[in-house]
Length: 417
Image (tube, rainbow, N blue to C red; front, side, top):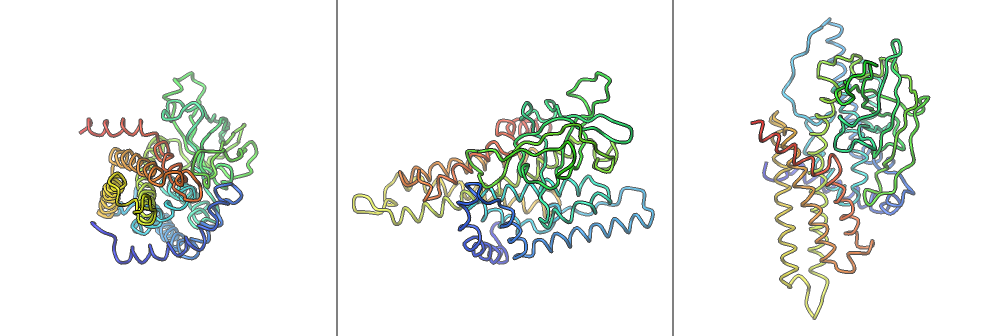
């Protein structure tokens, strides 16, 4: 893949029309917290048929699983060639266009949507039993309900597993959950929450080495409370907060896979798979930031005059524009490569996804900061939007694992060859 297809471009035009009509007029309200992003996401899904596409995809998958269950299939089904993309498998190009266009206007909206679908729905789809998928998936993929994915804790950060203190203890056939999660996207408003917790068997085992289990909680459960949205530097339209668990009783039906010995490994393996998808998504978002800065700066360079001429005639302005173009080409090529390899059934590894995330987030942040400098005093004002793009871009260097930890994952991948 070396360019967007005609279908991609048609989708892009339709998305831009939707953004101009439904998103741009509400950006300030979402940035201030006056409005959550969910009504707009639902309207987007309805207008482009994404909700119907997701529901149809989930129902087809569930029908196959029901048929296997009825036939008494008790072995692992033969895996089909993967096209990735979770409940929207086969539509990665469309989703890349959608994410990119939205990110250039309101990346917080994309973050809220991406976590609910790309982490919430996908984790249930890959780890859950048939009954669990029937219980939760359809509502999440259609955005009738919002999902959150809770792994980060106040004292863990990049050491997500080793530093995890949230724990469950067995109580008969149930589990009792205690602990706290922080920096959780959609946390304040989520209807469904995927929670990772250590299993405490009371044997004095090293806390760092304890098994990680994955549970699904619903809003309003006794002992489960959701904090208010944090105030942040950027991503203002993405509600982020804390979750608190005080002796929350969980039946085995809420343990993904309904077994502690999941065939795909414990919760660590589940999370690592999600990290890969999330980091590829960061590249899509970074491309959206770069494209929008690129567009705004070219337009400004053509129309802003100093000393009787357009500032685009000045060599230092041209240098900034040229560097933006190089970043745009590089990140777009990364996105194209990820789309092409995923379609071929060879999606990027965790190390490759980490490399994409590392480069694209740094490129987007540099481009956005250069955009502010190119705009001068105007760039520091909210009216011109590049300051919002810079604040949002910076989050990509922390989001989905800090860039420092990406270096480690890239290096480990290289040394393991």
